[in-house]
Length: 578
Image 1 (cartoon, one colour):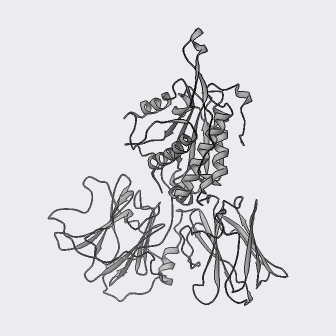
Image 2 (cartoon, rainbow, N blue to C red; image 1 turned 60 degrees about the horizontal axis):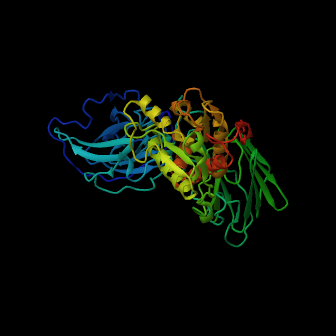
Image 3 (cartoon, rainbow, N blue to C red; image 1 turned 135 degrees about the vertical axis):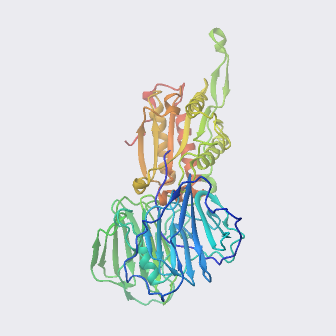
């Protein structure tokens, strides 16, 4: 219900073709405000390799911005070739045939939160992950002067990837070099909280890992063993990788060793066999990892990872065992973030909500009210925003996700015998005037409707994005049973998703709640501004769990009388945690 986010690092690889741009045309959007880039700070001398004098240079991009789309234009010197790699955290260009002018800059535009260049590469860091053809678009043109230019457009609504004017290939993994990593990892004062700069010490990709599927009931690999004949070895210090909102820990394990992971309020405990270790420890590693400790045991070693938040078997961390990158040491990779939730698929038996019995409804007034019939309980589900109002835009677009989840909730409840009314079932608003739109949504809770539930996606501004993650449910004293409804939904949602519990919130101002005449709640299912929570919102398994949590919370309210015409509110369950 607000805006934006932050993320970090890595790249793209492409070979270039030539298009043309008409006389007098410009690669910038007409009328778009330009963003000058004289503030590009030079990289400290000595951090990049020397280039022969007289070599062509690449860099100093020209930038324009319109809405959420940022356009970046690079001149292409004669003989230069380049490669592009879209990644979890931005677009990278690897350049040959020219010297990349070293520079570091903070924000270039709404969709480029950082720019780093040097050592043969330039990286445009975005506040959302890029897919092969989503989040960016590339083309090449020839100006009337004969100069070739590369035009890159980045934005959450941009799609297309490499256009036909771009010759070459898009790589899924960017080339690496020690010099390039030095530039990428150089500190950018004031741009990120301490500990959130990317570290090049971990030789595994930073995107959210795939999970060990050996136990589909668990979203994390709680135990395992390294293939091969036993070869006990000393355990080296953990390798640490840091990206915004998440820290990765890598333990190198020899063949024949095994691990068992236990979760708890203070972090993770990993019991290892087939290794030896001396006592070691470190503190203040990152916002997500307060410290780690090695302690030798008779069978091997115990590794303790102290995290910033509680870990459970379903949330706060991920683990996978990767084969050796070289040599014979496998890699136990553990990702730590309080925003990590349960993204495992629901089983067939879980994809259903228990039936809700029909209710008696009186007909007529006075004496005629003695006539009654059984009817399905009616619930209004409100997918927030829509049409020209996108809602929060970050890793996902709010209006798209809220409609997706609302349709899933409708299907679950309809199969359980509930009459579900959607305030919208397509990408549209109810009225072009926002206040009127909100009032129309609230007014759909007509007499005979039991409950009203509005679905939204949260966000925080860029400066605070890493502090916002998890789920929360809002209520208003518009009705005596609204708080109980909110509590049931919040508890069910946390139970199904394992998401961080932000608890219940009381709002005096939210229009769809304040103007509703029946028990009403507004649920925020995650933060599109957070790099890890945003990945939850992109995952269909997570959205299935969100929908199931909301649907089961609504069912609990219906069967327990937490409805517009239910028994006294005091008799309703009060499941609020806070």
